[in-house]
Image (cartoon, rainbow over all chains, first blue to last red; front, side, top):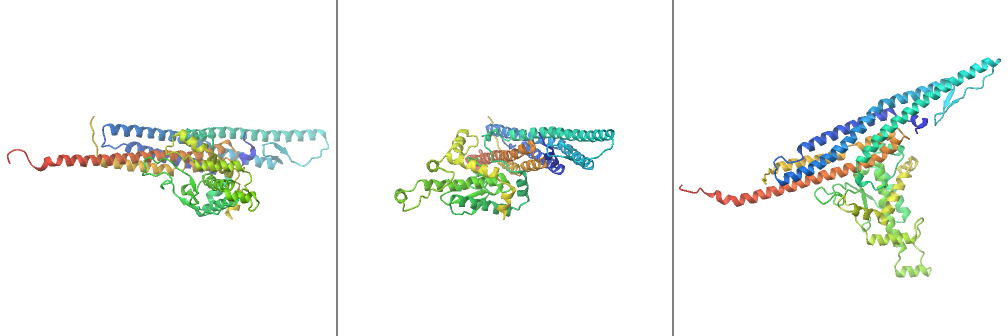
Length: 373
Length: 103
């Protein structure tokens, strides 16, 4: 149920921008599909190769068509809603102006309050007439607020359904119940106003914060386009299907983040927190497993116990150490669900995903501004 | 089964598919959804749009990867066809050295 405070903050201009962007995307995807459809299978081929290429091409066209279909539906829903959002925001301004003019206020949930100073009357009839008039005005305003909220709910339901449909079309293949987290819109909006250089500085500061938290040296983030590197998708390697957001390499203490994700605050912040957690897991595993002499010195009290990590138990850290010794790398095939399950469910990955999501979920504008300083 | 091929058309189709794969990555659907979430803060649309934005990015990457892989296969088959063509040509060429019969 939408509240009056929420509807007050709706923006027709941004809805208009979103509709325009979806129209552009829909058109671009349509053109892309047409080109791929027309040029996809070499004309000069015949025989089995042509048939195989044709079948593969048809499957790809169907996937693109499914996506286009949902993008079009969302575009239609948002385009249909943009005019209504504009009308709704006008209605909100109208009812607020009328309320103010007649000395009423409307609170966040949409309740109308009479704030006119107490009136004195010589005759009870005049008092009754006055009260009746005020109540009528209040009811009229309440009815208008109610109409606005009902309309807002209808719009919201229609748009949300189309957005959910896009999300569903965008891959049951990676629907594993995990998310990268949800960030407040004001943080996303602030990120969009930042330059690429500024975003990278924020990510570096975040990585440094995590390094301090885990007691490991600071590492300069390496921003690479992982789509083209040997560690990500290699377009020249037919067996390389894996796209990676980033990685931590313990041997060389490298933190690599995909440069194409820097514009996406959820992906970028989640990845930095996730990969730095791996750095921390290695350190904590080492601290939980001192060598024989080191352990002896600790037991005799000659050396302080290095395992000083709040919120992590020694057993957990030892489990991570074992896990790193038998680490299940991600499979090369995105549809190898058993391989992905093995990779995702191992303790170090499950823990790092939790940390990444937590960082995104707890990010606020204040924290972002602090990181920008 | 008849087999025919024109290597250059494989290259053209492969290049076209690679361009499609690149274009898929530039589709700003996630950005449009982010703007939508900012247009209607507090609504379920806003919450769903944020989640959908990440999924769309992932999905476009998967689609782009699949199209790129297709293009690579076309290139490989094209190269293989070209090599076969050259080998066949070498096999046949000795027969082309002279006419049979009275000169």
